[in-house]
Image (cartoon, rainbow, N blue to C red; front, side, top):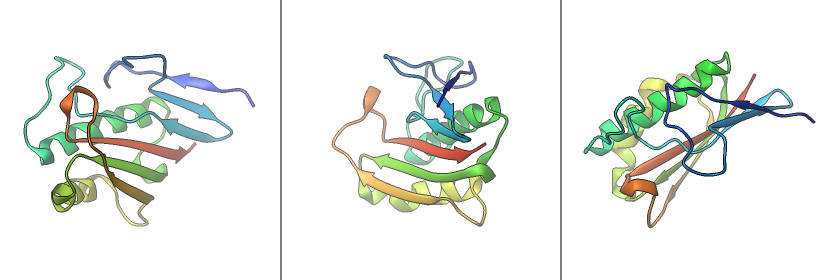
Length: 125
């Protein structure tokens, strides 16, 4: 099955040997999006602003693939502190509408650049 790399300057560039996203078999697989502003490299301080920026970055990748948040089937949210779950959920709910995608949320010990969360997605194309 051939795969196509999806790349946009509207989301942070990959910082290693991976793609921002890959399209294959009618599905888009995004790499984890951290809350780095692609324009100036800054990271917001608060967890809610970080959640918003990570989802904006994910949205840019979806848009580059010609799809949107309504096409997302599954997300995985990696968070540094489980006590941030409610704040992240509040922001997440402003990007996703019913029927919501399936989701896993996992607390991790560390994330790149010291951010508080990372979000990856699988979407239908």
